[in-house]
Image 1 (cartoon, rainbow, N blue to C red):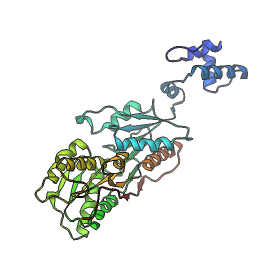
Image 2 (image 1 turned 180 degrees about the horizontal axis):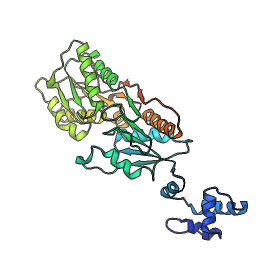
Image 3 (image 1 turned 90 degrees about the vertical axis):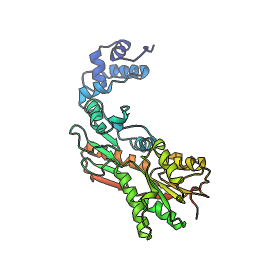
Image 4 (image 1 turned 60 degrees about the horizontal axis):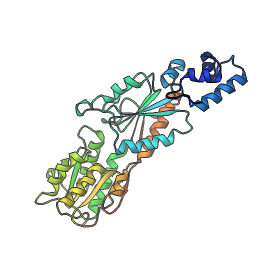
Length: 333
């Protein structure tokens, strides 16, 4: 008969007709339990669905075999990373704990240090930080940072080639004949946003086109923040014929704004994004974008933190390539 609610070690002991100490020995593979008794306890554990708590596990062995995935918020980029991480964790012997603390807007800087202090040592053995604001070794558990705000420094990091990707996006629009190319940038405090703007600037300069500040706005990587600057760009008297938005969500919002203003994508304005999240192919029209290998970034971060936990040497930084994916949101001028 199954116990109601959370199954405890006492429930297992009563059902198996043994002491709690005996159950504890079986769970921790200690000597002193007859094979028949051990088999009976394991049978009851399976029948009742008993799981020892992570905290109890850590107190016994000083290890939880859990890797924490710490994010400021769950959004398309971090969600895609989680898919890659979860695929890579199979057969490693580790489990995953995804954690976000529900931050307020004024509570975002330094979030990773607060999260680590809550989880490290008792709930997780190591951590993957997704776009952390500060990349400093925690001193308590191995940490790998994915796409950190300030770029590679401190802890081991994984990112993609933002500069080359932004150049490819801008060069694609230039090859289509566009010369007035608007730029909707990301958050100014992020290294990825800085590199994507740099790639945009370099591509224009290499084509002999002066960068026009009037065609540049900050979109903040969020649809709500991209709304007003997208309206501004597409309402200019001499509006851009194309817009490169620094992430897909901003690009999709730009296409929606274009429709609201009576413009057709790509007939009246071409739009390119960055990331290649699932929403990009579902957009109307499907979005031309720069593909980050987001799943592979997550998998690489997982492998890196496992290597750190197992004492295997790793390079301190891994940068993965980006690729342009051409869909229906761009056309020749």
